[in-house]
Length: 325
Image 1 (cartoon, rainbow, N blue to C red):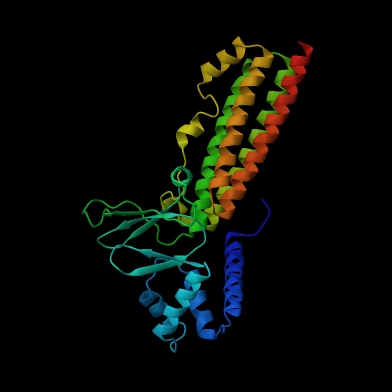
Image 2: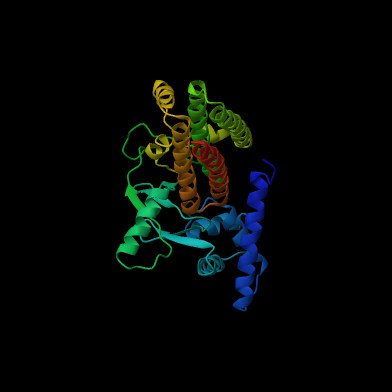
């Protein structure tokens, strides 16, 4: 894929956020001073979950003349213009993080260690509950108070410390896209083996070739992401999916696929493929609507478009067979 690198995308996003803050200050008739800019730069480059005092100490390393009151007021302004989100860990101290995409937190009540995660299924449930009770959806965040492994004296699980969150989210999105592409390739390869009708074989040959090409492109992007972020393998998932739903898109049992295709007419075999592509299109369209971070949405929208194209191709072949019959 051709485009900006992950670091370049991050720089562009940060510059856009600074522009939003500058516009907000102008509307409020406030000055965008150098101390304020230093505070904003440090905050937007941070991993978030900072108290005002923690941010103050980080900014002091860049600008020793900055006072705590300036840091506190700037954080309040960032929250007012929507660039910062506030969180309460239950200890009465507000923490701040850049407000870049909707996500949730697991917080250790003993040491305040925080794990971020996304779940489109959880987002859908929250949206449905609000609708059922006639509430207007606004910003929300789920906060799960728990105890981490270190604090319960159990062998600790891996935790995120250094890898860019956008890279972790992109890895998770690419993994589910690759998994679906592998399932599709397996299904169409087995269906091709069992198909003797020339018109149907031609459709399956094209689908196998496209699945191979898409899979190679995704794996190349996945490898490039790992090269840019070598510690990705050590990072736990952040974006969670309904893998049971993913498994239901394409039938995977090899004898079952072959027997099914052999037992049906060419039109019926194409109908099975059409149903699988429709499930795949709905899966990725659904996640494109639910996932809020840009790169993940782009991955899912691209896949939804590809599956829709496959669906159209199979439907044309199916309609042609129906017209002959």
